[in-house]
Image (cartoon, rainbow, N blue to C red):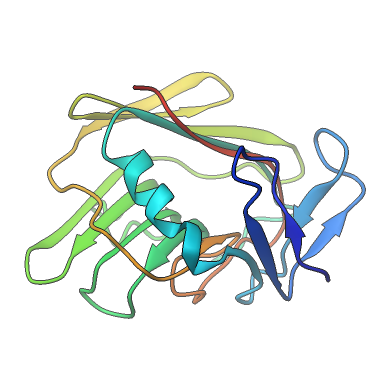
Length: 193
């Protein structure tokens, strides 16, 4: 696959890490991922922009498609300074409920090195074979989770997203450890301040 420039006002460069563009997206073409660490990454010069978006009210949303549901953790997007309790944030499917009392969950996780983790999750399991829309919305100290416009629940923010200098990944968690085995379309992060 090839690198490209996004449609944001800053025309950011996106690097391809083993992913592809598929002609059969929800709206035109879509990102396609293998689930084995393939992703697209924003180059490091733009990453402060991501941090600033998370410091106020925001909406992060995208369409996803999985042909089948894996029996494994799925990273949709994130940033990480490394494994363990380093600075990071991520949007994931916690398939076995490791972070939410044994209940499979959609998680907006935040970790601050030396401070702790805030794994904000709501019960959820993905649907196979259909395009579905996910949205994570912050308003004040509350995170709202939605699928196809229906509320999945809310969580209270207990940690802020730290300044992270590593690349932002789409299609995998911030470490590139686990990814989405499927497609993603119309990925957006919007500051609502």
